[in-house]
Length: 328
Ligand code: UDP
Ligand code: MG
Image (cartoon, rainbow, N blue to C red):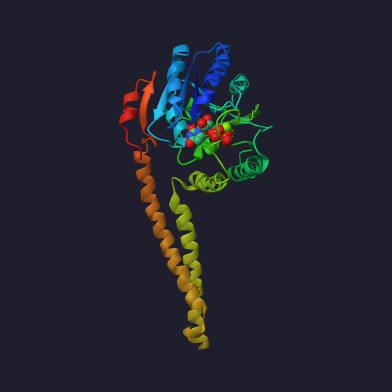
């Protein structure tokens, strides 16, 4: 078993891979630890997988996985994380915007006793209006809502103790929430400043649209944090509140009808009370449905969110079973 697993998602990064491998091996070999590098080709159409296979001649410790189509960075990372065997996982981008020379500093922090060390691209080399500004707002929002004081959730360069990342299930574009999700498992988290380079070759895969996804993912993660095992507390709580408010309004309507002689048709509160009561009932039943759903979820959640086309240089014994599992 290697001590370190480096996991890298790559989508149309053919031009970057040679330099990435050279820099990565340069940094990793000087560490004096055993390591493996898993690069997941996320359905590239520019020959990324062919280059990965040819790199294996020089770097036999490289494992290349080719997903059956482009699933997105999150699924690509999930595919690599699932197969990693090292006790420490290091995530990195394939485009050399992250610098492999920062890896020793991340590892040193882990040795201080942290479970997750997050890279902070303090001098981020991306456009300001479309990338850095939205990211800054998103980072502050996530820190505030999740109560984790980090500057840079979006930086891929992070180091994790295996037990705090491998069990995490990732969906959609939730790779930005990997740290938040490991914190839900009780991980001790810190950050270190890391270098960031402008993209020299290939194109960025993201635009402004992702900001909206971040907000929706944040709501999801916060909900999972607070109510995943007991959704009835949230839905039922609001349901009861609305139900009681509706009942109180009905009581006022009836009091006015019988003791003050005001007809129900002259009391707009009557309609409002019915609205509250109906929504209240709905919320409680929604909560019960959610309860059934989470119970099922906890029973069947070992399904991967991707499907692999081929693998070169696998050292993972259970590789075959990953082939056969169907994506959700
Ligand atoms: N990536 C991927 N699948 C995708 C989009 C991106 O595997 O559908 C990889 C990409 O190859 C890179 C990393 O995710 O290694 C980050 O992507 P990118 O550099 O485009 O993001 P940015 O640095 O611009 O935020
Ligand atoms: Mg990049």
